[in-house]
Amino acid sequence: MGRLCLARRSIFAWTIPRRTLPALLGLAFIQCAKPPDPIAHDVAAITDRTVPHGGRLVLAYPLRREGDLARASWQIEAETSWEAYAEQVIERLPEFRVAERRQGRLRLLRALAGDQYHLEVAGEERGRTLVIQLAFEAQPF
Image (cartoon, rainbow, N blue to C red):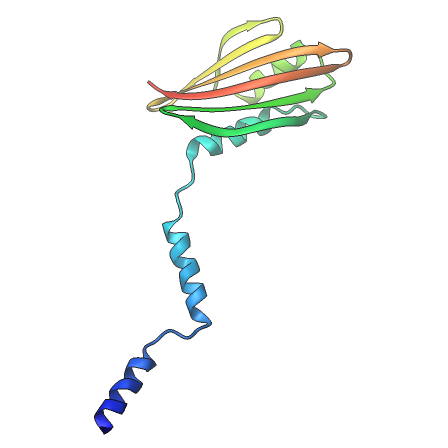
């Protein structure tokens, strides 16, 4: 009988204290969490760089996936002209090349290893305010 009691005590000596268990479960959750999405990271950076000084982000739809495509869109308002805004966006996104530029519309492209990014920018002047619609799309090539 003495050995059985000793065995029980040694088993319980190896159990995890109640306060430690939640911390260990939290670490396990962190280890099992999905890795960050590089496209979502890029969209956040692009969104930040397309808001001009003094402008404001009015509306943003998060990145959504549709098969191989990834899409996001957002709207900005700023007190500036279309030409000034287009120049500023081109300067702030040097990794993109201008595929098309005309009054009120700008299309930018970026080729990456295995993916291509498209950024459509459309602006409409409403009085002194420029309302800018941006649509991002990533697709494999």
